[in-house]
Image (cartoon, rainbow, N blue to C red; front, top):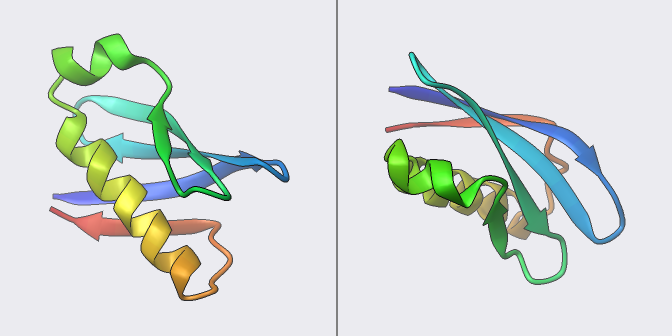
Length: 79
C-alpha cells in the first residue's frame, strides 16, 4: 500500500503533516521540530481505525528525512 505524506504548515516549533490511507482518508499529525516526537491530531480515531502503524511509520519517515538534512514538502512510504 502506497502512503503519501505531505507538509501542511510549519512553525519554528512544529510541523503539521498529513498522511493518506486508501479507502479511509487523510489524517493529520504534528512533529515537534526539536524532539522529533509525533502527535496524532485525533487520538480516538487512531485506535478505532487501526491507524497506529501508519502514524508511527509516517513519523519515522519524517524523522529519517530530517536526520539527513532534507527539507520535506512531500514524501511517502510503501507498507
